[in-house]
Image (cartoon, rainbow, N blue to C red; front, side, top):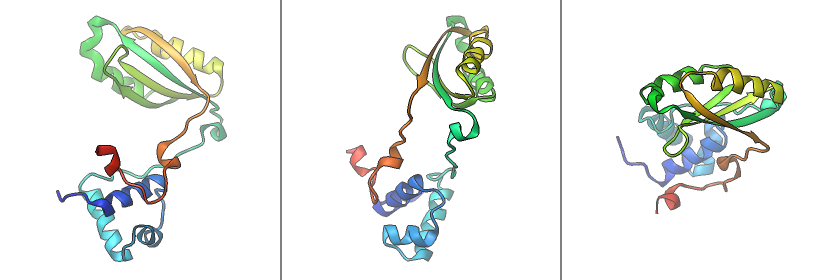
Amino acid sequence: MREIDEIDERIVWELCREGRLPNKELAERVGLAPSTCLMRVRALQQNGVLRAFHAQPDWASLGLPIEAIVAVRLKAQARAEIKTYAQRVITLPNVLNVFFLGGGDDFLIHVACTSTGQLRDFVASELSMDNSVASTQTNIVFDHLIGVDNMQPGGSWSALRE
């Protein structure tokens, strides 16, 4: 795998902000010829730096205006089931993301629901009733700001690693 340089970082940065950015415009933003830019993007994909390009839906527009983060703590005797629990939960309706944690809680589960009633029922029946679960704590998401949506154009992660 080749070394990632500042131009590669800027390509990744721009694609995180706008995954469907046409190659010609991406090349202009990072100061490359379009053919060189395309080769770099392909190399970043082949090296696993760029794993996928995703749509970012507005869940409320899709009829799911209630988002929540549910903290889940497993029972001590269920520690052997951590990986299977995560794989089971990620397939449940309404689950957007599952974060496996170190610390007091074992998982944060990001969900989107039609109503607070659906959220309550989901947590009560799908999460809390699981024999592996010791406790849950539900937090309603009022707003979700996404870092790359608010970063300055032409940025890089070099400063973050210093």
